[in-house]
Amino acid sequence: MTIPKIRTLFITKMTYPPLGGVPMRNWQNINIMMNFGPVAVFSVFNEDSSNEAIEGVTIWHHYNVAKHPSLWLRLQRGIWWLRLLGLNDYWAYLQPAAAQLNEIMKSFQPDVVIIEELWLYHYLSVVQKYQCQIIFDDHNVEASLFETLRCSVASVRSWARKKLHLPQIKFTENDLIRKSAQVWVCSKQDKNSLEKLYGAIPHSYLVPNGINLKYYDCVGLGECEPAIGLQKSQLNILFTGHFGYVPNSEAAELLINQIYPKVRQVYPDSRLLLVGRGANQFMYDAAKQNSNIIVTGEVEDIRPYLAGASVMIVPLYKGGGTRFKILEAFAAGCPVISTTKGAEGLNAENGVHLLLGDDVESMTEAIVKLWLDRALQEKLANNAYDLVQSKYSWEAVAENIKFAMADLSKHKQF
Image 1 (spheres, one colour):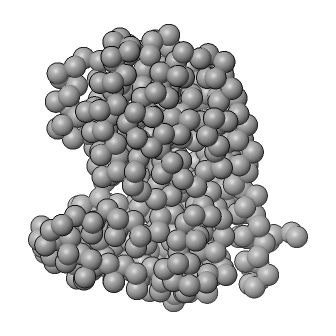
Image 2: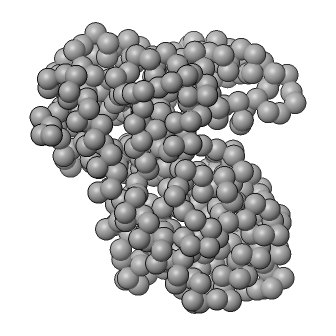
C-alpha cells in the first residue's frame, strides 16, 4: 500500500543532542517519520537545548519551563503532597507552553501528532481542537512503573501516592489510550501489561526501541579510540544510564557494594565504569576510595567507553521499556551480562546473544566465565549484532512504523 505524504508533529520532553533512553527513542521515531513527510518537534523540558535548529526537522521549538515557573508550580515542586493533586511532572501544566503549541498547530497543520509519554497529557486539549490523528507513544506502562518504583516503600508518602496519585495516573493513561488513534508500545510485555490494566487495546502497535547501527560501526570495527585511560586489553566492566533514575542508581550501588568486589577477588586489576548523568554522592565517594571505580558524569559520546569496555553489565531489577544500553552494546560488539528484568522485552536468548543472571553470584560468575573464554565473547557479540540488525535497527523499526502508518491512512485521507 502506498502511504501518502504525512505531516507529523512530536510533542516531547527532550533536548538535543539526544542523551539517554527516552530522547534516543524520540530521535529514532523522528528520523523514521521523516520518511513520510515534514516533521516538527515541540519539546517541553526543564533544561536548555544546545541547538536552535536540527537538520531535517522543519520546526524545532524547545521550551525550558525552568525559566518560567509560576507560583503554583513552585509550590508543587517544593511540597510533595501538593503534587498528588496532579501528574508527576510539574512542567506538564504550563499554560505559556500550551499557547506556543497552539501557534505551532496553526502554522504547521500536522496530519499526525505523536504525544511522547503520559506526562504530556495536558497538551491533548490543545491538539484535539484540530483535525489530526493522535498517537500516544506509551514507551513505559506508567501506572505499573509508578506503583513499582513509588508506592512499594512502607511510608506515609508511599501510602499517599498509592491511594491518591496512582488512581489519577491510571485514569489519565487509560483516557489518553482511548482518545488516541494508535498506541505505540516498546514490547509485547508492555502491551500485555497495558491490557491487564485497561482491557483490550486493539489499536496498539509494537514499535521497539532501535538504534542507528552505522553510528556504532566504528567501535565494532576497532576504529574508535577508547576513552582516555582505558585500553581495550584491560578488564573494564561498563554500566551506563541516567543515575537519577532509581533502578539505575540501585544497580550502581549493587555493583559497587557486591558484584565488583567479588570480581576483584579474581581480577584485582579490573575496573568498574559508571557512565552517565545524575551520579549520586555515594558513587563519587566510592570512586574516591577506589581509583579503579570510574564515575564519569554525563558524556557527549558513549562510543569511546564502549570501545574500552570488556563487558556491559545490566544488573536491573526494576523499570520498564527496553534498554538502549543493551542495544548499544550489541551494536558495538561488546558482550552483555544482564538480569532477566534488564533484558526484558528483547528477543535475546541466554547463552546465544548475552548471559543472564539474577543474583550477585551468577552475575559475578558470568563475568569471570566470559573473560576466560574468548570464543564465547565472539559468539555472543556476533549473534547479538545480527539480532540488533534484524530486529532493533532503525531500518527494522521503520517497517513496524510503516505498517502502523498504512493502517492509519486507511481511516483518514492525509
